[in-house]
Image 1 (tube, protein in one colour):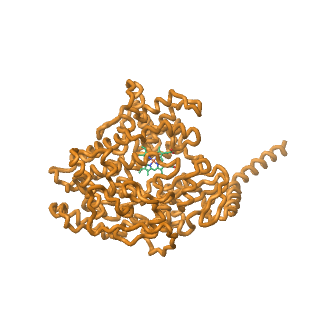
Image 2 (cartoon, helix red, strand yellow):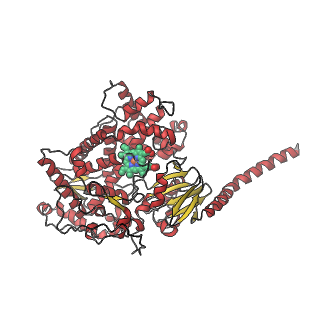
Image 3 (cartoon, protein in one colour):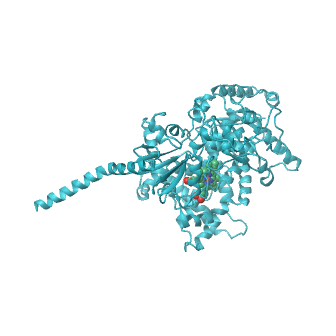
Length: 628
Ligand code: HEM
């Protein structure tokens, strides 16, 4: 009997010891595998991605995440200063943790290979965080993904893009009216946008809801809701986004009984409220008589619920319908809103770039007028934009909304990098570091961290009707036989945040500029001879050709905008799993900027200090829209 008890104790102890040693054994095994690849590697306690995101947030809250430290750089990979570690480790390296290997990529060619081979580099297994209402097009793979992609396709039709244009214009006008009523008296008083971030989130949500969900809303209207709630539509989305982790990690049975004033209680409230709004829109669509030709995402999802997919042999489940409804709103509203927000801040800080954009806007409105239209039209005017595109592309390059995209090797894969071949073992997580590539000086030049839309301008591609400034000289593209140079870097600012601070002079000039506005020297503002605070760097088209340009350029788009070479520009990722909402977002961006700046110019509101601008989701920096 005694020996039996000893036996059990020994077994339990051995098991306990094994569990304690397991991470060490796993790390040892993964280290051995990392060495066999021949790539440089770094040992870290947890892999990049979800775990490092958690650790980063927790350590930051505890005040233990000092910028500039190695841990900060490692966990902060994929955030806007994400190239720093590559400066030390190279453009492709591995991190090794007890949970496995992760290959971090800031090399365009390797990124191209990874994004280009969907079956060899699939989505990683643990993407369930965005699964909270159900499986969806972003986190599914294989035949299920194909089914979801086919069903959600109608959201990205040209008919819906035209609706995005109209809805974007309508919502922007609502937003400006909300500032007018909050601001003061005369139409000449600058419009003060105190919470531009929150306003742009609401605008983004309303644009998708109006154009893709067949539910046009006024500024403060909510869609029908299937549950009783005090939260508005936009508040519930905001709260769901803020409480994604508790919603994802906590069993719903526990969330349901959590105290209402706790984070878990608020998370549950927001989760049920937003679910209620989505259900309300679905229920209303079910009750509506079918009207052919009015296809939107909801009608497509409802049809997929009753029609079997041939390959899968099943229809879409209720939770997949909810999952896809949620993911379009989630993937589409915040990314576009943050891009608009950063773009407006950058335009406020670079009045000379803003001038070029305003000229384009004026010329496009003038042309519409000459064609007998007082409003812009998607079919005719969207493709006339050039500086607006350049502003959007440059903003997504520098302030990449989704810093890293993650993949997974389904079997051993060979990659070519820097003239060598490397075998990447099966089960390696691959993080394509978009921010890293965008800040890689070998790719985008030594000023990679500087926000400068003029780098997108290809000579000879001026918008119709747009007269370039007299001093503007086209920069010829260098010959394609150019070889990648090695740069000696003049210590660039460590991040766009630093780049912004680097421009502190500019901000002081901007402040003076705003004061001028406030002192009502408006005639001077409208005059062409006004000396605006200059951009602190020479626009690209006035500079000698950059050797980096031929590396990133694969020609020009039909609008005369730089067409980046594959692998060099990844805000929307690339390949078959690239963002399907790229054009949706571009249409929204262009029409919002055009409507906002039709009669106004944007500046920082008076009294704002430079240091307040940070790179995390933009905080409340008041902007002023001054009538021009
Ligand atoms: C500036 C705006 C946007 C940016 C930067 C952006 C970025 C991205 C990125 C990087 C991916 C790939 C994610 C991954 O591989 O893990 C993606 C996927 C996706 N995005 Fe966007 N997105 C934007 C706007 C939108 C909009 C407006 C919509 C829809 C209304 C949308 C819908 C989607 C969908 C459905 C996917 C999944 C594609 C698939 O896997 O088949 N996105 N987006």
